[in-house]
Length: 153
Image 1 (cartoon, rainbow, N blue to C red):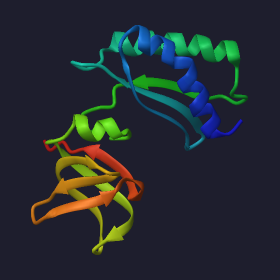
Image 2 (image 1 turned 90 degrees about the horizontal axis):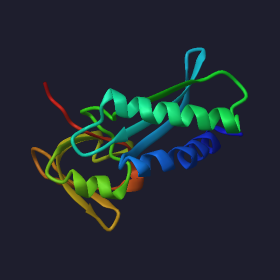
Image 3 (image 1 turned 180 degrees about the horizontal axis):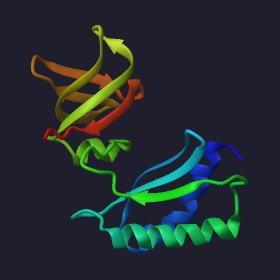
Image 4 (image 1 turned 90 degrees about the vertical axis):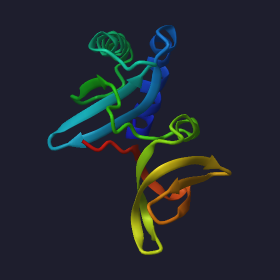
C-alpha cells in the first residue's frame, strides 16, 4: 500500500470519531523523517482543540488501525491541532480565513517571486487573491505548494 493509500484509509477510518465530536479534519500526512515514519492527523474545532480532543481521536484511530493493520512497518501516530500557522488546504479554508494574513509558497515563480505574504481576499474561480504591500496578486490554486496562516510574534 502506498503513502497516498495510507492517507486515504486513515481519513476513512478517522471520520466517524471526527463527525461524532464535531471536529474538522484539517490534514493528514504520512511521511518519513529520518529513520521514522509518521502518520499525522491534524484536527480543529471552533475554539480550538484540547489535549483531550487529540487523545480521543488518537485512541480511536489507533484501535481502528490495529484492527485493519494496513501498514506493515513501524510508524508513529500523532494527532494534533494545526497550530497558529494552520495550513490552508480546502477551498472552504480560503473563505473561512478571508481577511487574515497568509504566507504562500509556489511551485514556480510569478513575476520572479516564489512566495507571497499578504491579506487573503478569498478564492474566486480557482484563483487565490492576496493583497500584498504593493498590489493584489491572483494565484491559481494548483500553483500553490503551501499556504498557511501567517502569525507574527
